[in-house]
Amino acid sequence: MRDYILRRVLLIIPTVILVSMMVFAMVRFMPGDTITALFEEQAYFDTVQKLRHSLGLDRPIHEQYLSWMWNLVRGDLGASFATKRTAVQELQQRLPVTLELGIIAILLKLVIALPVGIYSAMRQDTATDYVGRSFAILMLAVPNFWIATLVVILPAVWFGWMPSVRYVALTQDPLKNLGLFILPAFILGSTAAGPTMRLTRTMMLEVLRQDYIRTAWAKGLRERMVVTRHALKNAFIPIVTIIGLSIPSIVGGSVIIETIFGLPGVGWFVVDSVNRRDYPMIQAVTLAIALFTVLTNLLVDLTYGWLDPRIRYK
Amino acid sequence: MNQREKRQDSAAAIAELTRQRPPYLAEIGVRLVREKPLGFANAVIVLILLLSGLLADVIAPYRYAEAHPKDGFSPPSSKYLLGTDQLGRDVLSRIIYGARVSMGLGLIVTILGSIGSAALGMISGYYGGKLDLALQRIVDAWMAFPGLVITISLVSVLGPGIPQLILVLTLFSIFPSSRVIRSAVFAIKENQYIEAAKAVGCQDPRILMQYVLPNIMATIIVLATVRLGAVILIEASLSFLGFGLPPPFPTWGAMLSGQARAYMLEAPWLAIWPGVALSLAVYSLNMFGDALRDLLDPRLRGAGGGRFS
Image (cartoon, rainbow over all chains, first blue to last red; front, top):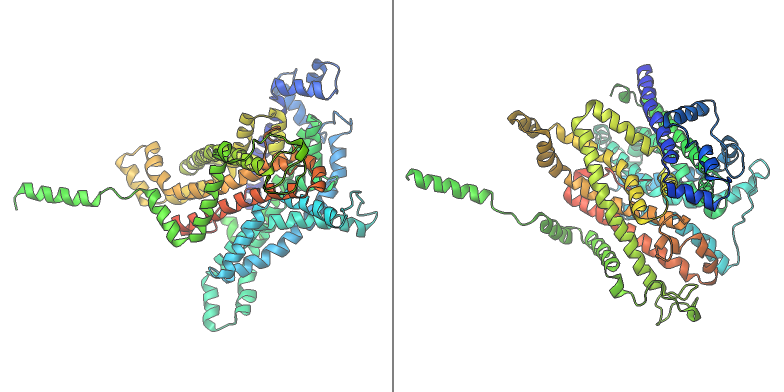
């Protein structure tokens, strides 16, 4: 087990370095047009020289990269052009919102996707299966921003009701807070359920093909017994992987939903920073999100290795 | 039978065996209609959308920027089949022109992305070892960024414009699919005909093109259909957030954007049709891809399905 952990951890080091280089390069190699646009649109600095200096563009590339990395390691992700607050402060404030949205969305997604996927696998190639698969594809085809827009617009047109836009923290008023999140989380979760459903179906099919399942059928066990007693327990491991893989996608999916529903989370912060051309923030948030994804993937891998001993010796 | 006749017999036998078979594509097409009628229906829908984009100038009743301010916000009628928007532009025409953007951009990105991911997957999978390790770290690094986040950031750095958009979307779609191709190549590498080819002295590039590529063609094609769907969606998301093509190009995403939301309260039909178009396009593409995969290689069932998100 220790070898496995060591191997996995060593593998992410080059990935993390590459990620940091990519984020660094993004701002460092900004085309001149963008810098001009930044200077002209947002009056953050008096002269282009000051702008270039603040972006670190007047120093040699290796010196700048090393100083940026040095700051990173000490926990300094840079400060905003617009608000002068540090990136860490901004992220700290917005992370709980995105996390809450993401967790509720994942729960809803699993509640929808897992039963349908499992049932689809049990009735492979029947009409039910086909309906299930079509449904899954329909859910991934429908854009989540369209559903969210319809959900906001249509009740306003028909009943004159709009979802509330004032954000209330969990600590202040839990019930109102949950009420605020339930609709966006439902949209996020249901539109993301498609691929999960198909993955569940595939994993379940693989388990159902095993010999011990065939033995259980041969013994004359009822379907429910076969599925719950034998199949599900072994399908559990890949399902944990599915859950783990869903976590990094919290942030990606939250970008649009948070923007539409006005939830002050990390996703909305990305859009806002881009609109304000706040490049230090764009850099910091992108890096933070990527590192978050890498770390959660590592944790998922380790959990998978712990749950399924066969993986450790691959 | 003398020598000459024997040789002629063998030649005839060889000619018979190597006779030109009907073109691959036609065969697939026929099987599609016969065995997978629903898949064929979806293929037809995709074709209609592609043609609409291509022939937009001919089919659309009005030009996409043609404004009739007096008829602004009119509901669907015989004059404007899907109604008009705030400037009096015909919604149906704008949707048809929107197909040009989605499909056109999507096709270019899909072709580039398919070539790129196939190359990456084949090289990584075939050569293995240190090269594979290094390349996969790069792929890992790219995939650490959620699709929308990295595309938004890149668009903000590179600026608006069609070439930049094509670059960003292509980058978005190359890496996840290269993984699938890489696995497929791993499986093929184990086959004996590869070993035999090497034993005869076949060079690597030739092996890749002659032996590996034809066998992963099915995977590449199926991935291409899914890729087009994913690209259409992410381009729509970008346009929705305001980072896609600038106006007055009509894109389905921009027609649903937050800026248009105020108008939607007045005219709910504005909110419906672009979304229907998007859903229809992606749905048909995915269903067609599924049917194609079932036809081309049922063993692929369950591999690489779904959206790259």
